[in-house]
Amino acid sequence: MTEPLITFDGVHKVFDGPRPVHAVNDVSLTINAGEIFGVIGFSGAGKSTLVRLINGLEPVTSGRLVVDGHEVSALTDKQLRPLRPEIGMIFQQFNLFRSKTIAENVAYPLRLAKWDADRRRARVAELLAFVGLTDKADAHPAQLSGGQKQRVGIARALATSPKILLADECTSALDPQTTREVLDLLRRVNAELGVTVVLITHEMDVVRHLCDRVLIMEDGHAVEMGDVYSIFAHPQQPVTRRFVSTALRDRPSADALARLARTHPGRIVTVPVNDGVDAGDRATAFARHGVLAQVVYGGIVEIAERPFGSLTYAVSGDAAAVDAALAELAASGGYTEHDLGGLR
Image (cartoon, rainbow, N blue to C red; front, side, top):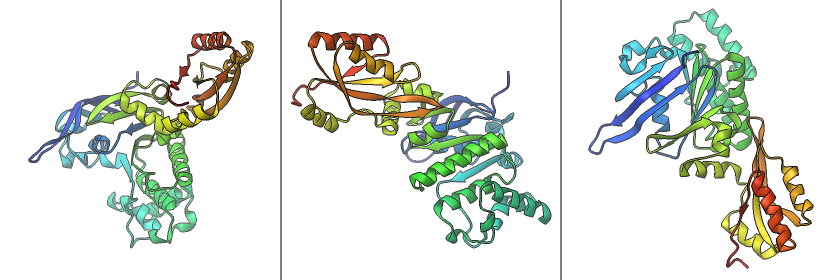
């Protein structure tokens, strides 16, 4: 069995001060080579600190952290220097040198690594071609869009051919279309270059689109972790359910439910849709019992190439027939009936 590329074993990070901050609190997890691993949490959850421990930008207070066979938690800053070229990092605000050209920005890590000029030029040309910015080599950051700047950041982070790429809120400053393009580029980095990606975000949509597994953090703790589909389908913790709801928006809010109650007679039920439940089969359950069922709300997305979401129906007809149809749904994947008391 292959050893994990990154292992946290009871890791703590405490920032000293008049009121010490326990930013990472007893975290244990493994990240495997070749996966895209997401770390999500609200502001102050400790996710950025967790990732900064990986490349030694922050020292571990206690516990054991192993990266690519090196016990980072036991190394001095000097001992960490040979390891850092193996770990690239991209940032929310790009962190480009405004006075340097795009080619010079990408070449900067290679200068630090003392590559000769010919090797630098060849590597920079290769990377700019990979991120689709060959024609911008002589431009300056101010001449680029936000998405282009982040592509430069990715190229620079890949300059020394790292095994690990850390992405800290790398799409937060971008519009939705550009975010999708950057995420697609990160997927190529992972698939074509074999780079392990550790992605920090507060957006569950980003996790849904890109990640294989995800860790949810709250107040420095690792509160839930699993493959992305399982986390969406069966969230266990309240904070996880909050994140899932922001990404799907497939169930009616209280205001939407009140509107539906006023405009649609009968009972209102929400039916889950996932890879174990065929939405068409469930819809025909209403027809088999002679029940009128109208879709009034819902949404279905694809997660890891599998369908997930829900549909909300306004159901009306003979009371016994409705009960029979809902009993069939209960036996084949479940449903949620909404309490309309006081809404009509």
